[in-house]
Length: 429
Image 1 (tube, rainbow, N blue to C red):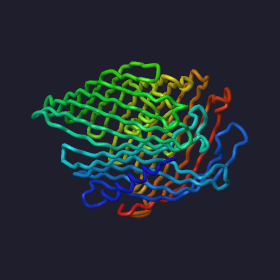
Image 2: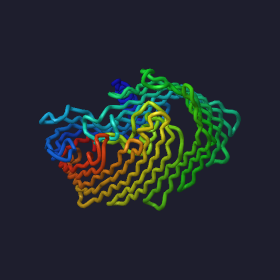
Image 3: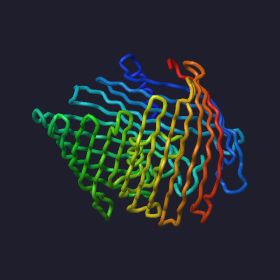
Image 4: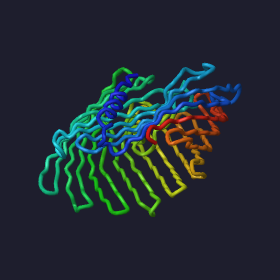
């Protein structure tokens, strides 16, 4: 696994954006342990395990000629009884852009690092987990064609790497955007793009080209932001081609002074890497497998992500729902329909104490494989600020699986309880 791009982005972001011009920087390190009564998530002959771990979280943002965004949430886990090999879970989202000519010529570096299933039809354990890294770099040129019209040209080279699966690839992407400001708060653009995907193992995967054409309308007001894209996508593979619709709707609405509603819905051709990056734009970094299905082909994905967030003086609440339907061009055994629901509730119960309740339920159906299952987890947590820089966290979680794997009906049935204790140190907290 060539994960070095992630660390290059992390180091560069910290080096360049760690100065006084950074708008926001938070940093913490943690150490603790988790006890589980069913580390292998099996229906019988469960094994308990103690899992010591060390963690790192970073949130950084810088504005100016050099812009940087960096989010890290990662933990290194060791298994005391050697039930599994030591592992790194969590991930990194990083983006750097440097304006050689302000507002006219930029160079962009992006990286997303995390984990995915090796086989998404099987239960999630460290043996069914692999690192996934998506690195991108290239220029963007903006040419003014008048007071309200711009022509934007961009080119990107990307490198996608899987730790285990044979889907490593490189890709070249070119984009042309002709945009017109309709008013101070709205714009309309014509967006054209083409992308070539070449796999490191062409005997296992077929290279393909992906072309898109869309009209995009963007608008904003004091309480609402809206972006709607509509058009067509064309997928070209050796000896075959497919066309499909492209629709993407993104709406954020400030429902009240303290609540926000966010919707992202649409349909288009994706592949595993693009789906991974898009989900990272909508969802947080997972301390475990992301929902992406690793494969070497493109697929038509219909998707809906809906969330509502409430932020009060002492209480915060987030409710979220998501739905995916994926129909693949080649690996039809991985055609998937997935529905998920989740919540996170946090309440300040003392001057230095927070109580949280959280949970999520997921239903997945790989109909062509005869695999259908649902999983849920729920938990409660307590966080104490022991000082300005030191905090203590306790977690109790319950996991429950019910359904099938490729090994047969009912082979995904399991129950697991986890209990965690963690100390976190945050300089300048």
